[in-house]
Image (spheres, rainbow, N blue to C red):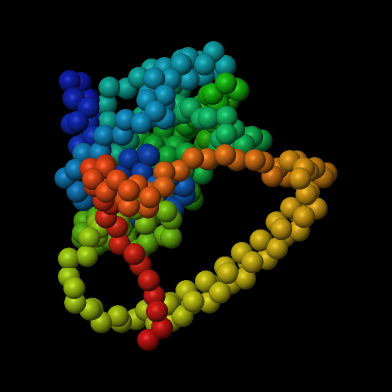
Length: 309
């Protein structure tokens, strides 16, 4: 069972605020650790903060503008009819689960998710595949609405149109609800930051939380010695592997000599000329200090270092 939240007359800012009241379809993949472009800590920060994040980059603009086109292509390809819904849905049993769906399929217990992808992402859709975070998004929508089927259609820009059909899966949906329930009840509602996942996005969010050191004292480090020893082991392994990588690259370069390309049955190697221009900031600072001071930009960050005691 679900309840409907009317979106009639709701501004874009208010719509974004409603989305903060629960876990949406685009959050599901990150909460499950399957979204390469987001993380569970990023979703947490969005849900507990009062900030309204307006995403208005080119990828978002293209996706919004082409949603109608993808829906039309889906109707042409399948013969099915779809319609927009002027509601957001909230699961009654699990009110932390909300859904703002792209389309509903007329005459069928199903919905449709519309996607656009660049040609560089085409490999993610080959052989019937679907990016994992999109799969979780569709099953999240099924969990909220109770619909037994969800289609996902995608236009690979400049290349092709494709679509897939996902059917209700009791085990997967039970696991998804369990993960989302744990995240919402044990982290969002308690104001506890979830454990980090090692992603670049997680690094960025932590940097946003604690971007400036405000205390000059030293805190007692408790419970991390074994992990920091493991970190040292990892760094040694990484260093050894990087040296091996460089040796292999150097051997190939010596073989190629002054040739730009080299081919085998399995690999295509290029060693191209690259010209770049960089400002000599050291010279500018020395010879034109006033200009350097006027146009110099100070950036603030924190450097993380570990040294043996």
